[in-house]
Each structure stands twice: as C-alpha cells, then as structure tokens.
Image (cartoon, helix red, strand yellow):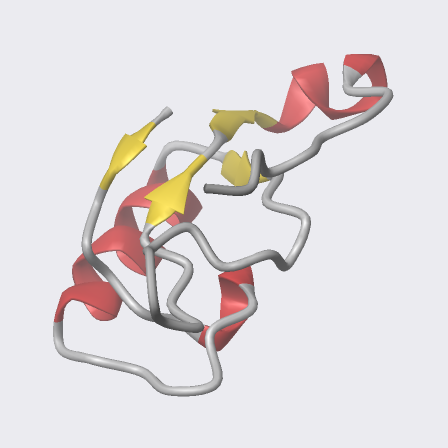
Length: 70
C-alpha cells in the first residue's frame, strides 16, 4: 500500500497523468495487480492515488477491500 500519486483509469481515476505509465509498466513487468475499490483516496477530490498492490497470485485471497472515509 502507498501514496503513488499516479492517476490511471486502471485503478478507477476519471483522469490520467504522466505518472500512471511508470506505475502501469511496473505492475505489468512484476505481475502485480491493484485492489482499490473505486473510492477516492484524496480529500476533497475524486482521485485514487493511494493504491493497494499485491502479486497476482494473492488475488484469490483478497476477500474485501474498503477505502476508509475521511
């Protein structure tokens, strides 16, 4: 988990930015996936910049994922 400041439609942002390409490439190269639930992770914004990332093998073990409200 972390604050990656990359906006991508892959993790439910309505807009994209230049940081997303680096993150998307890393996820692909390392066989990683995001588990965000589509909720905004930044106050007073619709941005999803805090990501939950695991290896794709762990995906089946993720039962729930909830973004806490501010």
